[in-house]
Length: 309
Length: 249
Image 1 (cartoon, rainbow over the protein chains, first blue to last red):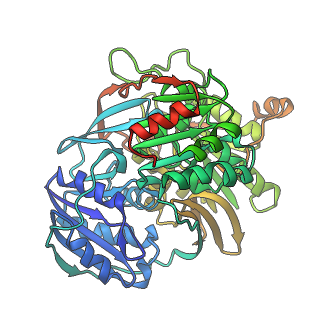
Image 2: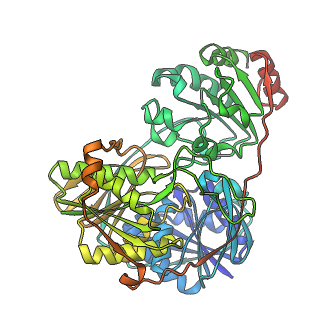
């Protein structure tokens, strides 16, 4: 089986979630990549070095600069004549592009796979991760998105893929990129952080996120996350959200501060290796999944914890 | 302009799903069902566009069993003008749903389709993108803001790093994220009024769409359970645990 993996990149680097997608794709067979973007020669060279990669298709044009699905999907479809499966990371961009590809190929996509059972059978989470479905696809070609936390990252070095330029149809004339407000942070990225400190509605305001959560995160070298309630209340931006519809994370240590543990939140973090919960309500559902629970007022306990570390 | 709003009847947001003992699926017998929360946001957005004078008519559509009528009545009570129920007693996959919707789009010619980014039952996150592909329209997925700007639609999207804005040529497909708006509750008089709003019944065959599933569910299982650990007495004990894990200085 030959698979084509769409490469997500940022600032000239291949993103970690793509490395996990490559690991998943390798279980299906030979792995080729598609790097689409503007001035992406460096990305393509880096992608070709990833262990196990055969060929890297490079589409370098302004039309591909911002991963607009209207432009990228037809490019993928053009290449899919030579492949049996299309694989993308289940990131905001991957989720935006893959179903458009699937429909153009008349294929029913398999979303956010957790494992590859065989060439046509996969497991995937449904109902906010409360039910894991094993599904078998009867489509001739497969279109798959991959949950990053479920697969190890492919090694960035060790491969020697060939690089081949492709042109594609370019701008479909349907959409254009206007701009982005991307959160800048010195902290690690949520989805690849080893430690995450997350805050919930109990933080009460955005100021408390700065004075209570962030110092602890900085002490631990951790990323900062949040529950939906905290994001909805405007304490932190949307990209902090961990949960069913936010980011799915599985760090070594997840510290939940003032988070009650709604099923939608648990869906995003329950695969963390160690979960620590700090909450003043000892009945909070978060304690049912926490390895270490501390029943305490977060406004006292968290600064004390930060001070003692 | 007309706005088409597809809605899905799903398990209620607050209900904890239970996997059936025989591993065939999730037990939905006697479980509270509601409109998919993301679709509620879509209905609300369509109503706001109508209130602003941008939209002239809102058509709610659902593909599912007869009981999905209730979901459509909710959409009508919120403010949709009429509804279409495409009846299928067997589950229709996102690809099939998108194909049916594409036919309805061709028939109704809406200036915009707004729908939830994902349904909270199958968590597929596919229909909007697939519909956009099948109709050759641009897509603004995971929207947190929609602005009509002449012949184009500006959509602010929730992406991994923050927010991104794209400009789409009308007509477009937009999928909603959580923070686009807060859906209203239907008032009692509007719930009564909704009962007399038109609701057409169709079948996938009426649209000439083959909805035979492409995916076969072999098994549905509960995820590995996490068991509760221990409660620590105080911060000092927690510090000791962290040190034992080798993270604290």
